[in-house]
Length: 255
Ligand code: ADP
Ligand code: MG
Ligand code: MG
Image (cartoon, rainbow, N blue to C red; front, top):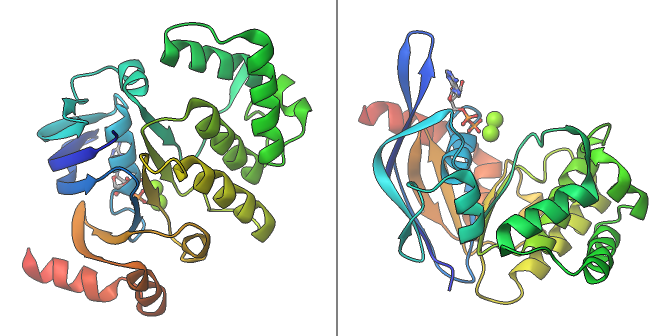
């Protein structure tokens, strides 16, 4: 099973002039096997939603619940959330100088499984994942994300996704900055992850082009800290054609 439920989630950050509410009542259920795309204007709080689910300390949950298979993940540490089966591919993957990709992956896998993977087996798995994402084997010896191009960082995140095989993955603009070939490689990786049929995916994106490769079951419009509309894949095309003006105007009128 892998069901993620977000219920009336409110999140604040500490701004210079006091706490500022960014998420204003987010509701979303991702059932096993479902792909949910989230689209919305810059600054609406999409990354805040991703970080809040993952447990970034900068974000304070003031109200609401996030449940993974019925378990409250908000009371868990970042590590515990990963062990419970949550995964976040960040919009801006961080560089970790001095930690090689292979050591990082082994540490992550060990932390999540509670035991070290079989070394020979794991090396093979890592090399396979790198190959699938068109990253040469030499990448595993490099420091995590250090000097990686934008596309290489994003592909490395999907290699992690493959190796860690979480219950629910949140991909924050993983498609931004990818050329057409890299986009296809990333999409193939994500689709393979979803193949088992019981994983969940929250795909934050600005562009419909990735949704041609990764078919969403639902498209959600996110404005000013909450979801304001929902539809099928056709909604993404409508958003690309018309922009978010209509929604921003309606949201302001409702205030
Ligand atoms: P999106 O991913 O949709 O572009 P973000 O979640 O990155 O949006 O940001 C949502 C809003 O929260 C933005 O207006 C951003 O400036 C604000 N924000 C995020 N972190 C802080 C912070 N530490 N202090 C003040 N404002 C913040
Ligand atoms: Mg943004
Ligand atoms: Mg963002």
